Image 1 (cartoon, one colour):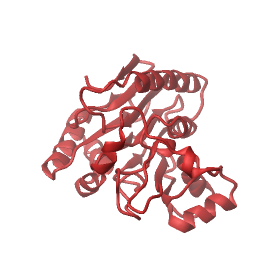
Image 2 (cartoon, helix red, strand yellow):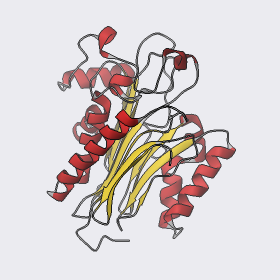
Image 3 (cartoon, helix red, strand yellow):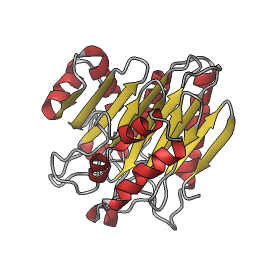
Length: 293
């Protein structure tokens, strides 16, 4: 399934936690502008890895989504952040889990990938690594975090969810994926979902790059991103590979959305939740931005 043309492709998501009837015009505008910026990077020959890191950084720091600045406190009253990133060509990957009060968990995840022999650091170990390597800390957690667009304080009492992610194919044929989240609202202290897990939440290889969003426990139990990737590699068409996995997540009682790009330049952004904030663009398709349709 090698890439034969100097094509590129990009998809972004702002979470599958969209609620029908709410207005997401602000997030759609942001996703569209960010997709255009990433399109420019890819046109200029930037690597897929750099593009997905940049995209997720922007999604984390804008405060519009349930990741980074838009994250809500857990049951212990503080924010814990998860993120992961993977380079398809080398299969290098990095992740952080239950990281407290750093501006960009995805940047720290890439640091884990490039500066350690490990794939994941968690909790106090992730914090010590991020601090030792000079990543930006949140100066005042009490004022930094804010509820994202479309979320009210009442939602924190429910098991709402949201995640951000990016997948890209660059002009050299490289694929990469990255995902970040603040986790489910009101989650237990120390809870970790699919987002920082290489395999369920994030995956990239020579053929496909995938980022998941949704109820993490069900995504993990259904195999998540690698379930799609392995089906696709075995010859199952991309839409069917994703449909089978989303169907299994639904059967287990969860809802989810997924973005994927392949080495052929295919883009997929399906979901089985009420909606998913998303955007895509490629050499073969114009900019698409949507939440519910």
